[in-house]
Structures are given as C-alpha cells and as structure tokens.
Image (cartoon, rainbow, N blue to C red; front, side, top):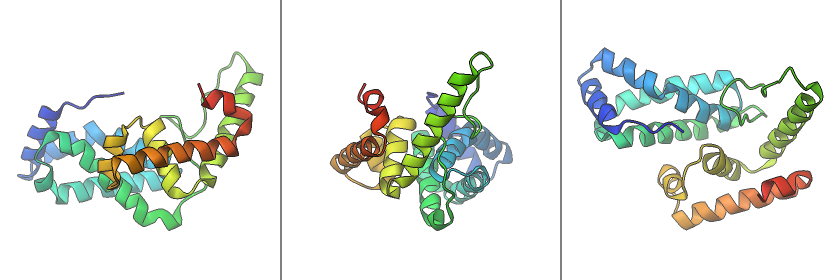
Length: 188
C-alpha cells in the first residue's frame, strides 16, 4: 500500500491554489490511480469510474482552500469520490472488482483449470457483493479491500467509529451467509 508524501502534497496544494497548472497536473498524477481504484471498486464500471475520477479532481480543485494540509488531500479526494458515487448510485452497474488492474481476474498460462476456478470464485464473490445493501458493500470494500481503518472510514463517511466497526462486522456476516462455500477462507 502506497503511503502518500504529505509534505509534497501540501506544497502542491498550495501551488495549485494559486492556479499553478504544473502543481495541478502533479496532484492528478500522484492520486488518480488510487481514486480510480476506489471508484471502480464501488461502481464496478470502468467508464463510470473514470467519470468519477475526473469529477473528483474538478471538485477538489474548486475546493483547494480546504485542503491546505497535505494529509487532508488524500482524505479529501476519497471523500469527494465517495460523495460523487453516492450521488450517482442509481445509475450503477452490477459488478464490483476486487483486483487493482483490469476488471478481468489475472490468468496464468500454467493451469487452465485453476484459472477457471479462480474466475468462477471471483464471479461468485462479485455477485454476492452486489447483493449486499450499498452501505455494507461500501463498508466492506473500504475496510477489507482499501484496507482503511475504522477511524479513517468514520471520518470519510461521517459515521462514528463504533458504527463503522458494526457495519464492517455485519458486512462480513452477510457475505458469509451469501458465500457459505467459502466460509473457511473468510474466517482465516
């Protein structure tokens, strides 16, 4: 997991707030992949995720004055992306991707049977995630795929830390019910 350089972000935000196009370009380059992966995991559609990324940076650049602290840039971008996704939720697609790259699961040329099993498991997990209520799906993805702490999620979603913990627990419990064939894997 990439740890952002907050001092670099702080300097870039200050320069971008003075309409420095180079600073804006660097902010986008430094953070676009992270925002895209979050958006893609939440909406499950590459085109919609790219739209969210573009809108996220536009909105961020409109509100740079609120992000003078470099540590708040990453958090602010996440918050904007989640809010935009929440606004677009009614037009969502019915897939969720867990891997960082393309929507397709990685394939190995060495074992076609295993590739088939992995693809089948991925499709089953995606289908189960899409059956979760949006709140729990979002919580599961932020906690277990984005590897955010409940404290970070609390700040991002505007819920209490105990509520974030409860929702993460409930999301796992719902997935266990939806995926009983993988129960041993999930309880590691």
